[in-house]
Image (cartoon, rainbow, N blue to C red; front, side):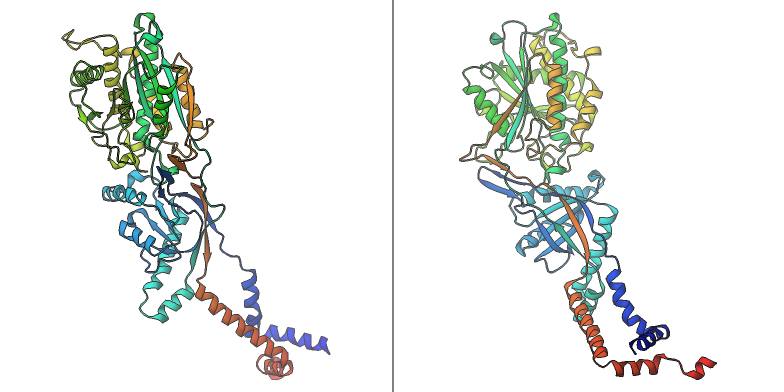
Length: 562
């Protein structure tokens, strides 16, 4: 009996397409492949504490539906947008409405952006950093898949502006959405995060402790809204490259007894420069308080290098105008003379700015030395420390002109050389150049270092290990140039009242899952319930069901004969 009925059921499937679809559709749904997730690297916004004040993004995890920047409902949504479409007003609205996250898509070449977009971002970037937010903020480089996702999200977001509720409902049902997910442990403070500096010395001719010392300082770390995207080509990759070239040139002079000057040179590549020069601050304190070393007590002048890779302007920033006849004044005059005689197109001048102790961040690195009554100055092509590029992810390789950098290194080197050898600006009508021919500035050396530094992010949060590749390379290069052993100096924040706190979790893998909106689940549930209801009725009334099926699906004998 059951065998005969089963055969009839098979005949029913052969002769009835509607009935076949009734069972085929659920099977296809079950075996159809789901859209694979697109995974990509996402770089989280800065998170740090400085002098007890919290800055940046305080959350890292995301599991929210993606929505475009123009969506009216921001709460518990992950907003995805291009850099050019993000505004300060919209960002503030996201924080006020407790948006679940923000993903900003960046072009791979930021310098290719139009000038108006660059200017807009330079204004927006510091505004986003001024206040902390619990909203996870991420940045990612555009690729074909992400742009497709953005287009799909924008299309799905149009349902939010539908003319009627029915249109919005249908658009939500038929459209596709994306779930943006960042999982893993929450970002946490890096325990006892060190700030590492590199110190080296060239000893002058004579008794070391009885010779005056000139210190050349440059901070190597970078800053931007996303640490992993902060390459700091000009600030302060140009300063680091210049310091390394000066150490190379001076070491050449000091290996020859005829050109071995009676001056010590101290070189410091400091860490934590973007955090109010914390590495320099502690290095000064430890050096002055040490009973075993007279390192800083013998320093007659400190020259800090910061952003010298562009422009025909060159400024010597000081906290207090140097007295006439002082070493600071003499070196200023030498730099002025060299720039006028060798590079008349360069506009060189001195800028005096008092130290503002009320600011959380000091303006220039030389201010750390000036606060301890050490004569110091910072040389830079920037007229003000408030230049937005100093703390922006836009400070990339395109910001540095190696020819300009080589010219500025030449001015600094010639001024220092004339000072240590006592070549007065009035001694000759035409002063000789010291760094020429085989002793000239090595442009290729500068270019290679700028290329290397601008291809490696150097935020202080990543430079917490002595084995870090950039630090190791800097140490090896300084050790090669300097006769004295180069030291790595590590400092840590006070445990009770830390001046700074760094956090991990700066780079994550973000997943974009293709999903249907929540309202689609309601329609799907209703469809499944209806389908199961039909199956239930068919089973409970199988005889009636078979009679109906036979009536509509089994061909008549006459039809078969024909």
